[in-house]
Length: 140
Image (tube, rainbow, N blue to C red):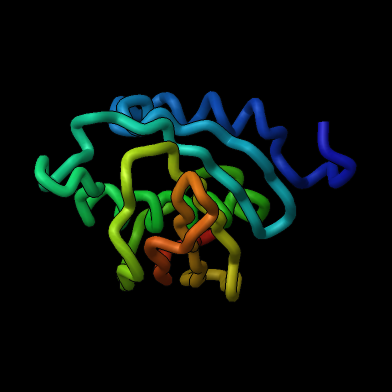
């Protein structure tokens, strides 16, 4: 268990994430959890390839990872994933085959609406995508 009694346990968050079939398919694994932050690992799948000649990952996968990490960075306050209101994604380079690491961080937590950002890194630690989301976070 975490030193912060309000912070959910990483194993609990892992179990909650994997309730969703899409999250299971992405091969998500909670690597680190801290107040207002999360780090996820997404296990490489051949089905992510958008261009067989080049072998790089579809932008939709990268956008989903940005959304998920930003969303779940809010768990230290909400204890759960929350609905996305708005999402912006920037693509920095093609993501070649390999596991992807995603770091999400809360920018501002509000009583009704919150914002968080995420960065997606390839197997070599290079930034491939980043973004920011706005999420509905009403208490209760």
